[in-house]
Amino acid sequence: MKILVSAKRVSDPNAKLAIAKDGKWIEGDVEYILNPFCENAIECALQIAEANEGTETVAIGIGDDETARFIRQGALARGIDRGILVSAEEASIDSDLIARIYQGVVHREKPDIVLLGKQAIDGDSNQVGQLLAEYLGWPQATFASKVEVSGNKAIVTREVDGGLETLEVSLPCVITADLRLNEPRFASLAGIMKAKKKPFDELEIDDLDLEDTDTKVQIVGLSTPSGRKAGVIVKDVEELVQKLRSEARAI
Amino acid sequence: MSKVLILAEHDKGALKKVTLNTLAFARQYVAKFGGSYDFAVLGHNVAGVAEALRGYGAGAVHLADHADLAHPIASAWAKVLADLAKSIGADMVVAPATTTGKDVLPRTAVRLGAGMASDIIALTDSGAFARPMWAGNLTGNVKISTANKVISVRASAFDAAEATGGQSPVVAFAADPALASTRVKFVSFDGVQSTRPDLAEATTIVAGGRGLKDRFYAVTEPLADVLGAAIGATRAAVDDGYAPNDLQIGQTGKVVAPQLYFAIAMSGAVQHLAGMKNSKVIVAINKNPDEPIFKVADYGLVADAFVAVPELTAQIKALRG
Image (cartoon, rainbow over all chains, first blue to last red):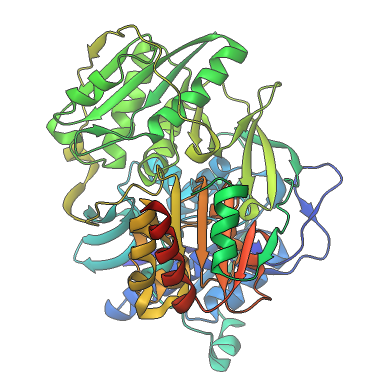
């Protein structure tokens, strides 16, 4: 079996963000982390590989040298076998082009399962896994909180509005990871050393035979929404009830 | 002139209110750029849902009723929705950004060669769509450059549309879900049993954080009961097993904007604020005055939730006699 798994870097959610001069992305000294949902996807891939001997795991990222560092440290150091970087400028691609880049890589690698984070916590679009599945004509199981692979099937429990849904999907398939899927492991020192020697391919978008590299959605401007102001601190429950009643008229 | 197709959301044969919030977006779009809107009702034995939508001014309510659409399997639903959009000449497909909308719409977009914008909160005069990014810390205005467009709508950003009277025709659509060829089988659904209002529809929400520990329900339920409120939770409280996933509010859970939001025993992490900071009135109760939740609260009470919340519950109960 072969599993392709995503390793996307995102800005630290607690970092202060500066909007780039052209207003289309962020800039400056931002701290980056591996997208938390990708960490769950990577952990899931490793667990499937541990349970199914002979499974190969491949991590893919789109970006620059910095992204390559995250593929090595976030995926290979944890135990993923190989890495692939597709060079592209993050700010100039949309979910649709990302999905088509993945599709190009899937055609080269022919994995049985593509495991992605359910969303990237910077763009927050929650689209790539579903787009990729449709481009490939594969079944999908998004927002997974439990994955069991047996034979050529995966039984996936999904976190949906109103409860938990379980689907059976045939391989090859696309699965997107939700946060409660697992507890991502830490990279060991030995893992970090090994990661440096693991196979790592660098591809250009041109290597992937895409029909075009046009985006369908463009950011035309970023802005900071007006924040909420802190209100008052009340001294006790009685004052809270009184304020909610007479001032806010909320109860 | 646009033709907008709105995917109706329903549960157990009843229309969900988020459909009407989504309709509000569609009406805004049509008012600005011209055109008309239709509804799409997909499912099995859902004629009642189509009937409930007839008074909302749509050109038609398209009913795709098929046994293989009984569960919202994304590949099957996306095919039928795209087939329908093509057959009626719709150039925009919209749905609420629920887990069903998020699952189905991107596949629909591929089938229509459309660009998709997720979680839209506003429409600009130039036709750009505003959406929260970076956990709502930034708002991105995005343009879709394809002729066909697919939009998921953040329901809490639009007031539910009112009925306009009239009787839109219900038109049966001969759906071909081709479920067998999608290689997906529905196995089971483990639903959360609750008599409380839906989080997306509640006017008051009592939300608890990790600080409530295994007394999560003991603290939140009595207050929710007196207020007729829905119960919500932070990711941390869900991760630790104190509340089910369906209650999670935040960047990657549900996004809510009720009239009144009680944030109890929670720190106010960026990811949680992303899901509730547009609530009208926010009340924070936490024993640590330095928690970031107090920075967004209209009313803050620095107190032990295990003592303060029962007292608050009793006082509100007494007020209501």
